[in-house]
Length: 184
Length: 178
Image (tube, chains in turn red, cyan):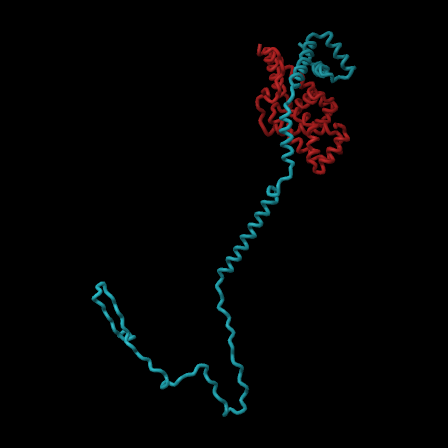
């Protein structure tokens, strides 16, 4: 049910006003959109707002998307753009552990605390990056896209994306080192 | 201390983003540079921690909430919520107000006096002999003064009742009040 033919059939039905078909399209891509938005924005409420906007844009552009042939890439690009817009509109809140995420099953409470603190520091370091660096890092290292796919999603060249990714990794490492050195 | 000129290459190498030739160059450098080894392992550790930290799943209810919100926005609105309805309602109200104003104006217009058609008698045919013409009679007979009824002037009696039942005042006068 995830093949290009099925998707094309669903999109064609959705374009004709079949909301049940569009709901199927949403179900196929909701994880991609919501998780990416959450990684870019750092909180679930904003990520849900961004996801809603992404799917509404998808509905309005069903014809274009169908003909573009790069459906996930289009979704990544729109998600990144919507998250940028949302960030500009709403001031970034302090990163925090989102209650919506299921807690990691750590047997040892001390280990769980260490993990939680590391996650907090990582989220903080992600927020210190520029918008483009964060988007490149999230798509490449967390979403697992190739450099070429990241470049397509961000509308940049591969060389630019490579540079953004390397800078982001170096900055993150520097931040984490600094954060834990200060804590000791 | 790591070598700044190697930072970018090492950062890409740590994420597997270098081609084979460049990867070999970085590995050769790492083999001889302890600072860069520490730097490289720090980046790899960071990447691992980041991936592990974001492996957590979002609960299905949050996906369902987004889905419901999107579909609610796409549902066709009932007719009374459509965009043209307020404009149409406003136009209808304006029409009603205009019609009421017109009716009101008509009701308060001064009524013109009824047009009475004057029935004129047809003109008399031209008299052949002016000496034999009969003067037209007035519609109402006019009596000569000696035939008119004399106006009887009966006295006017006014009876005034007072509070005292034994006292009644009569005022007798002529109609002229003399």
